[in-house]
Image 1 (spheres, rainbow over the protein chains, first blue to last red):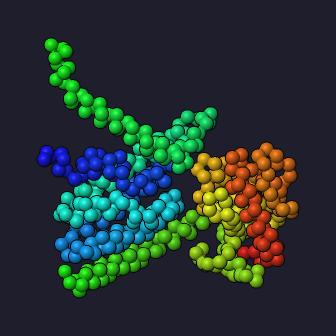
Image 2: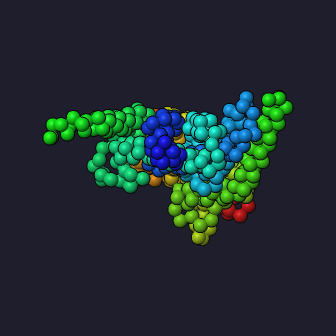
Image 3: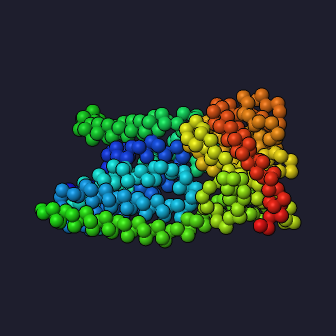
Length: 213
Length: 208
């Protein structure tokens, strides 16, 4: 296994991006990405919960009986979410309102349980911390990429700053639920096309060289 | 694995979770209350420009007013705003009504001297982004509440057909949300305008 493949932070960040590769947590991914600000806030809140849950799960992993591990992981995740809920409310009520019910729903975001079960339950605390952080930042990055496209096309602004002036007719569809699906589909299409091209390029050199020589 | 160890594990996890949650709640409680009060103060100041002093009243079911000291008290409330000289600028009242997606709740300013609504701002809503959510910031729509007459029933009319001072020019594409705003103001005014009028002397003094 190469160095890069074994780095839990980089794996979560991009190679196994929760949004574009693992397809985890699709509900918040589609629901709160109608502006860049909401996407970043949701991503950061999820990152915080993910890191906290991963560290806690990893530190108790040897003490938890196998039969009740899922129940324990969910209790830990729910605690982390409730604490986050209070913290966000104390930091900014505006952000709290924008996230609405989706903040409490982080607890059922499958990224949390998936990382707890697939990684934190089998790895030490520091690797689990890196995994949580990587997946969290990767989730934030994915959400922000969706949020950017949707806000720019749907409202003509980026982070609330108008980009095209008053004559821009907002493409409201991109702020509505279908816009979330469409944007996600186009990002996936782009990545699939890029991967495909890279795979062809890797297979082709032999043939290419023959032609050139 | 014996059932005892399972019970011990779950019990311990629940206990630690409980302690963490109560701890977080205690640590953040004061800051959350301060935030809520700041938001309330700011929105009242926005609705009544030039406001220097604010007094909060709780509205009892029998129409009596009680002086409040904290904004997170339960039940309907009103906020009286005064300028530097202590002159009553208006009262800020709460209104809510079912919109297109969920309950829309709002604050609005009522000037008892002219019997007109002089300001409106949405507190919470889940209306469609790009359409219904325009009720929060559409300039043309908010212009309706610069001076909205309340002597006749308030009603939202189709975009561009507003003729009378008690009509709200609806946002095109957001008729349901606009109508909900009209209904919530009418409902709240029917209930609250008589109470404000009845206690006007006391509210104007602003000392009790």
